[in-house]
Length: 65
Image 1 (tube, helix red, strand yellow):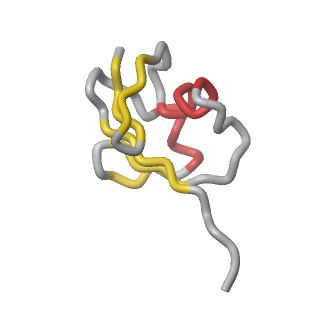
Image 2 (cartoon, one colour; image 1 turned 120 degrees about the horizontal axis):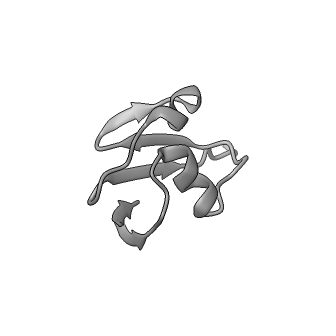
Image 3 (cartoon, helix red, strand yellow; image 1 turned 180 degrees about the vertical axis):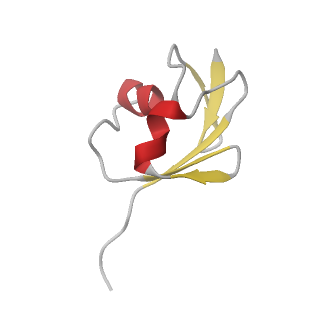
């Protein structure tokens, strides 16, 4: 299935947001996520189902001043 991650198309086999993060190499990284414009906290990612064409945003926190 194809999903949009940070506005780039990815063909993935993941069916949940948690699986998608693992598949794309974010597993264990501290990131914020949104699915179809809705913020999904880390504990909810395993239950957040992906559909074809889902729009996912993955944002890593930045440090510095």
